[in-house]
Image (cartoon, rainbow, N blue to C red; front, top):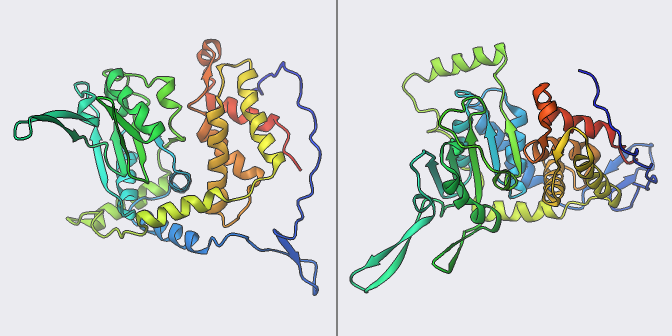
Length: 355
């Protein structure tokens, strides 16, 4: 594919900052090797992450990139949209992840006849007290799996706006706070359009990541069949261990927020997002919420790699899943088969990496 044209003024070269600080590195007297010493103790977090990966890998074959992104979402306290054709383990992956976390779990199957009250709850008249009592819906949980989110109509999807952004539900003028942590993982099929309702931009913008799941490779498909054959009548989820508690998840989320990021990398994030608003191939660019999402996700990737500071690679890895569902391709380019993911990657390649 040809490279995308950029008719805008090229970015100016940023000054080269000094990375060397006493807090981040020390040089030994015996040789010239540089040993990085973390200011934040990430050892317990890394051990928990490795244990979760081991539990997921006992059932899920491959998909390491998806698993890393899901773990970053948990550490960054963000919601995830899983997109893929039927049968690529979207739902089973979400259920597996929920079993490794000691959280209240709730699954909501979205259907065309689902009403907002079926999700958030409704007020019921209590005859004994002669007053209305609010009966909480399934969204009052810690880990919410919404299966086939685009199967429900717009009014039902809109019921998630407040709870996903503000972590609360308002009914009859009364606000009900959600217990932390609160994570929504939604699945959808990108191919089938009959009987589906496209998610509005305001809904998509509330997801930290959109993760696209591809078909497995041949070797992975063989491994899937071998594992399924070995299971026989056993339930593939029954031996999954709980790794993290509510308190530990909250502590790790607070730890991730403390990860350092240099000012020139903050500017790097801003330039990437600004380019989505100026790109001729996009008629809707990313909002400041996207910039914040990249910042938080980059810290999550850094923590996952055992570092207490963000690098440009962390930002690059965060940019595509954060931005690909927040921008809209112009109709002309969409007809040519150009996707938002391709344009975002081109933008990332265009913006100069700080040194």
